[in-house]
Length: 198
Image (cartoon, rainbow, N blue to C red; front, side, top):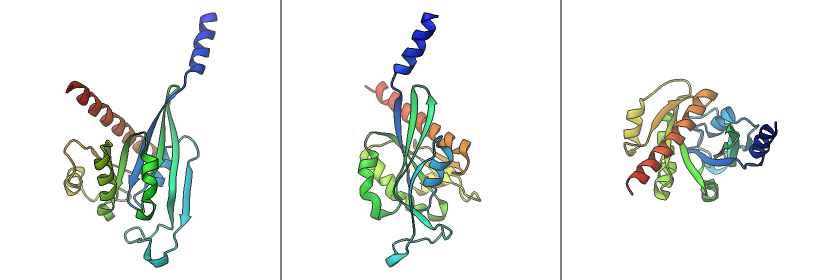
């Protein structure tokens, strides 16, 4: 009986490991949707209504979008008692990119969301993570139809061959979780390869 009590107290006294994952990509790619679909808590969202002032919000290709993230989205997933994932959705518009340096500090890696209707919009995210050496995968948010295969998208984005490109629907919780698992596994493979080369 004492050993059971001791095990419970030990489990309660441990501080869980928190892994920080960034969700990035262009305006309207589905970052807020992904965080909302997979978070076990009510996600923190900093959405504001689009103003259209001075043409700052280009909605071509995403005409149904009426709000935008102005700071970040935040969600959490508990994997085990000792492991939690914290999700930080970055703002997609360039006028908010000054926040990225703060949000990216301490991140394990990133998911770059790509929307094939506006594929070029994910280039700034890819460039950002490549320049900083942050591991990332590309997740193609398929919305209502599949337009191009993962291989074609990887070539169009000029990605290194080892960078995973996965297709999913950000509205689907299971699909969104699988994207996060793909990122964690990719980071683990990179770390093992780096350790083996020493």
